[in-house]
Length: 488
Image (cartoon, rainbow, N blue to C red; front, side, top):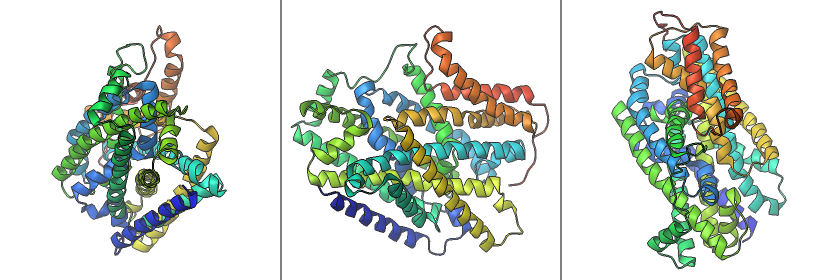
């Protein structure tokens, strides 16, 4: 199929997003940008969060993991569900009780300004790396299968896509992305279901036939019972739970949408609805991965990992399915990118610059600063994506999970220390040193675990180890004192 024809669908889709953005951002102010005027419908937020949490990584990378790990990723999905329950019934009540705009205001009220800014900075680092890794994966697929044939350089593709995202998040922020994420999630899930249907049809399989053959090929194996393996099922489930707490519950991007729902009950309903749907959707992506490997074997396609799905969809399936794949792919791209850019702008403006606490600033001055920060983060995204292109890792999902283990650990430790102890932290360099030292020690343990611990490999429990080290370090520098009574 002509790359120009496929590119035309990308442009039409973007124009549709711009239309939605124009409609939802009318009369938007800074409060609309940051928290959607705390008036979002929980059903829209829940459905849109599916696209944000899954992203292009799930759309491309999760099916690719089936060749090497079978359905083992479902161990992580099981842990994710447990993590969403913890968020719904522990963290959300905390955020609503304090009526926060940024979730890191909890650290300000509990400990003080240094802890607050440290937590926000770790979020910013985490989200920049995670979001740009996801963006790189999808942009690279578009580049290889469409834009290279049009002789468009990778840097220009990246620049234009980031410019698109800037255009439709510029005014409305959260108020806009609640609606655009719903649209994009719908397109992504339609793409998933249609691709599954056509592959089964071309191979003359029913759903039960496909499951039986996948089982016979051992692709449906979920649980790894090797205790020393990095993917041992207990490690994966516990690690998946804490990854979810870190990457969703302690992440301004994901929580920004949740706390835009009017009531705590609505927000909790949103979280549990989203988590149940997410389990089913992840299973379908793994099922698709198994079908792709069966299809590849029947057509002698010697490709694995992240390149398998796009290769099959664009070169071996009917043209109609190729179009659906491209729409699904860009639908998977935008929710994670627009939400990340908006959340990073919000966190930097609120947590680092303190715009909401500076009553001397007018609405116009605040907006001018917010726009400058928004553009700056888009430029940072551009630089990071170019670095990922240079690294050129073929399994981005593993990169994201590893990065999250290091960057979200200090956040997990800080919040856990605040929730489960009544001790105070010194608001000086000692507390910051603890938060920096914990990931460094965790890296040393992970790099040498097999040699030091008789063949034991550290897997997703990396985040839990990092959080525990942070917690222990904070305990060692803490003192028994009343919490700081700061004002949001």
